[in-house]
Amino acid sequence: MSMVPPDLKSGVEKLRRALYSRREDIRAPQQEERATLSPSEADAPRSWAPPVTPADEGVATPPPLTTGPVSKSHMSMAKKFLLGSIAFCVVSFGIAALVMLGGVNTISPQNIDIEIVAPSLIDGGKEAIFQFIITNRNQADLELADLILDYPEGTRSATDSTQSLSHDRQLIGTIRSGEQIKRTASALIYGQEGVTQTLRATLEYNIAGSNAVFQKQAEITFTVGSSPVSITVTSPTEATTGGQFTMEVMVRSNATTPVENVVLQGQYPFGFTVASTNPQADAGGTFWQLGTLQPGASKTLQVTGTIEAQDGDEKVFRFLAGSNADQTDTQIKVPFLIMPQTITVRQPFITGTIAVEGQSGKIISADAGKLLQGTVAWKNNLSEPISNVELILSFTGPALDKDGVSASSGF
Image (cartoon, rainbow, N blue to C red):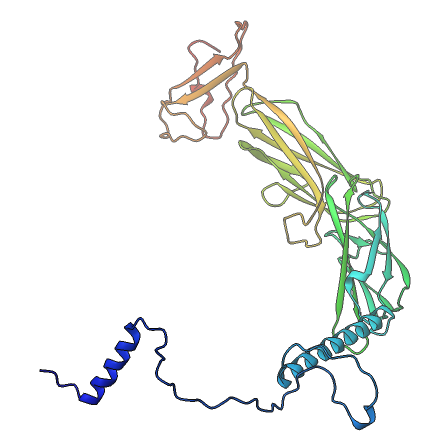
């Protein structure tokens, strides 16, 4: 049983009949009449054209291009961006013009040139002259400028060879913008022959309105030519193992000025034993202090010793000349020259050994008053036989009884 109210049912039934009816004149239920929409006035302008004032009446103007409404906030941001861009360009062009026209004094070490003119080969112990050309390409002056020179170790003053010279400072003063100045320096260069040395030049300067000290550096290299001294070694080309021999070493000055604090050091091979030196050497017979050598002067020394090695070994002796102002130091501070000398070691064609009571060596012990028995053994080291060999045995010492000496196969 339906619970739909009669009035709602009758309305729905009428609508259903109207929808499914084949009649064309059936009209839809009358719709509710709605209010008509009317345009409202807007405050925003409808074009980019400026407002017309009473003074502009009667003047023909082209129709504005309407692109729709534009907000005042967007208009303001666009104007600000455009004005900011124009201002930035104007400031940038102004700064560039000031720099190009010299309105701003900027100083850069890249605009300072230091050229060093020096020979590529400098003989040791002789005066060398260096020239320095400094150019200021900055737009401002360099104030309180000094030229500092750092010489290699062993350099001495050209005016006084007894004075060592490691640093030198030359006062320059002000170097104007675009100015070029020249300075010269001289020194006595010492060093080992053939070794490359370096000279460094540093320009220190200030700029106006600043207390900071700025620097610009340059350097040049050169090779040491002939040494201020020469070494000549005289020795036998061959030495017998265990045998004593003498080497003579002469040191001569090649410099045009006195060479101060000359020293000589010997470097000996393994197996060599120093017996004596003349004059007496320090540090185990390896170091001599020769003092001052005048131009052309020389000093000679001798080294005597023995060497132990195998037959055919080549032993190299080295003698190094240099200088050292410290009289207590047994090392060479500034080397001048090193001279090698090679000696070939040979075995003697005959070798022998002595044994007493079965003991061999430089020192043995024996009981007093006892008859001692000794033997002498010898060997031919040559590949050929040896004829008419004579061996001589010598006895010395206060404890020896010469009447008790006898030889079974000798006299």
